[in-house]
Image 1 (spheres, helix red, strand yellow):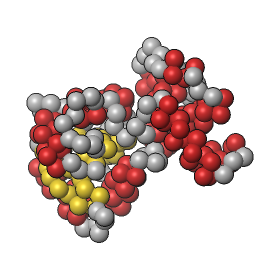
Image 2 (cartoon, helix red, strand yellow):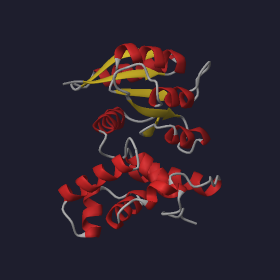
Image 3 (tube, one colour):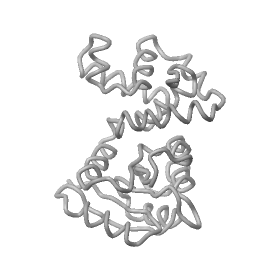
Image 4 (cartoon, one colour):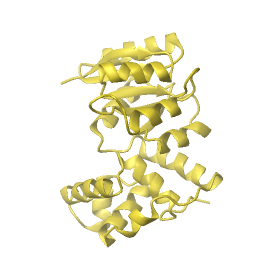
Length: 223
């Protein structure tokens, strides 16, 4: 089945360009477009896309607020979409807040067609962190620059020793295979641990786990 995509960006040419690139892929299908966050919410509720490409900065309602509303309680559709943030800059003040709001990752607007298609597939799958090195580096930078009070300390206290180990390794940006090598367990066992961990910490995906690890000092930003 095709992965359905909604594109939200205030620039019509950007929307058209991304739509052309995605529709050229056999397994991807653009089902709608929106010029701002409010339109993205309305059209997402009607179209129920698997993934929304969401520009960070838009008039009327920006991508961060739209993401909060899309992924927060009371969302009108049967299921919430995955949100992939679009940004012009690789280190954007707003992107960290967007990830905290529930976005699954971010993508530069000058990404190649191959990178764009891969990013949509990864986010739709929900089982891998988009661009692990880049996303982790960005989270680490903002964790260092803008320290925030710890969130989820009570949840972390309830983790088993193994779950805590997995959370730390996720925070370091390791893939399932790398986590398995670090802990001397199989890829299947890692996937089981990650799934249980995400459920316990109420995280939509690995990005949220990385943010939680940094916010609570389990992983320290590089100097």
